[in-house]
Image 1 (cartoon, rainbow, N blue to C red):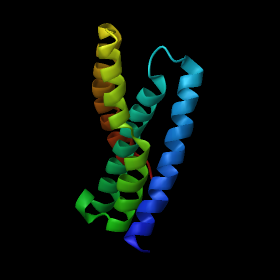
Image 2: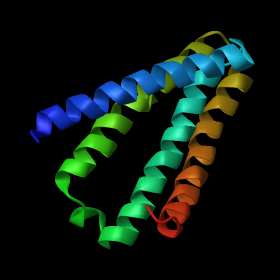
Image 3: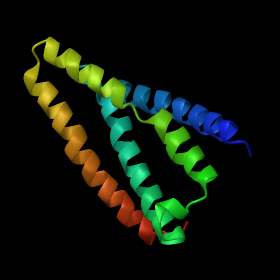
Image 4: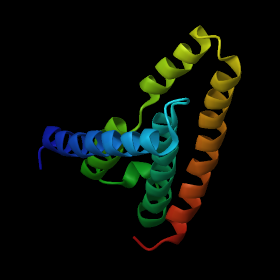
Amino acid sequence: MNKVLLLILGGSLGTLCRYYVADWGQHRWGVFFPYGTLLVNLLGCLLIGLLLGGFERRFEALAAVPVELRLMLMTGFLGAFTTFSSYELEAFVLLRQGAWERALIYILGSIVLGLLLVLLGARLGRALPF
C-alpha cells in the first residue's frame, strides 16, 4: 500500500481516538486541570512502549520492522494521537495564569509517568504474543 495512504489511515484513526479519549477524560474528571490531554499523552506513551517491545520481540530491532507498519502505527496513528504540542500549550496557559503548582504537577506528571509507561509498555510488549 502507498506510504502516504498508510499515514492518512493511521493519522485519521489516531486523530479520532485522540478526540474521543481526551473528551472522555475532560468530562470524567473536569476542566480544572487538562486531564484529557494528560490521559492521551500517558496512553500514547504506553502504546508506543507496547509497540516497541512487541516489535523488538518479533523483529529483534525496530529498524527491522517493515516500514509500512511503522509508518501506519507509530508515525501515523501515534503521531496524530499524542498531543505534545497541546501539552505544551496547556502548561504555558497554567503558568501564565499563575497556577505554578498545577503546571508543575502537569509537566512532571507527563514526563515521569510517561517515561514509566513507556518502560512498562516495552516490557509488556516483549511478553505478550501479538
